Image (cartoon, rainbow, N blue to C red):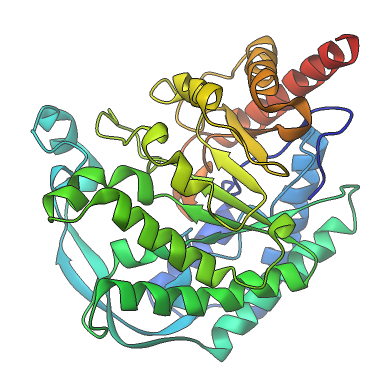
Length: 385
């Protein structure tokens, strides 16, 4: 993974807003409708090429494919066996630990998270990668590498879900224990992680659930840190044999718009996070609930050889951060962990699903342009120091 040796580099967390044609194809596939597969594949290839070109044009040094080949960041169901879908009543958000005391009842009652039924995945058999899943992986890698041939970058990454985010969202009726289920998923994900790195690309493990389930885990009678440790051991199992400098880990607090008052503080789990077999850590650092946690790195030493990818822009607000603010944030982290160990990033992805956009496209591009300009300002200050 390229380090920031002479200037501050830029990246983001991965997901971008899908073009309408891709959204239409995904909607048809989800509804079980027949599609023109040749047209879909052609649209996907050209869309990936365009989103990569646009990222680099905005000043992003380490781009992704926008996750265009996946229906959502929780894409595993299209790639593995062992699950069946069932329609269930949508659980109240408060029951998931986001508002256990009902303090924000009116907010969550009005939220789309709390309406209608959902289709829930249930594990009913061994979790194994399928041939169709392998074909999808190889297609995504091929499309991305073809797009990269038309731009000038030294590193690029593909995001993939971490085991924890799968086993928490899906029910298990096959494996005897949560841990057994978790490690079976990690074993399956190993194939995807390795396919990416074998192609010379960086893999990013996305963990959107780990940090926001403190209350439900504790309420279930488990020790939260032990639960986190189990999930991260499973991730390391999935990453086994892959060079650390080909892996980055993304930690966020769920990304949804809301109060986030029950988010576990980074300081409570940072020592466990640093045991992951990766080189770089992508952590939310721009939103108003977590920006203050730069202070964690005053007391926590970043291990030698590791890199921080702190969020300098937020996916959750439509304000376009001023480049000077971004430069200040970058310089603050550089002063704590060393400028060569900082790559400026975003808090989270801009589109968690094929139809779930956190911002309008124009705002996303403006944010990335501002991120790049902020990095240039911080780089000039670094040269003078």
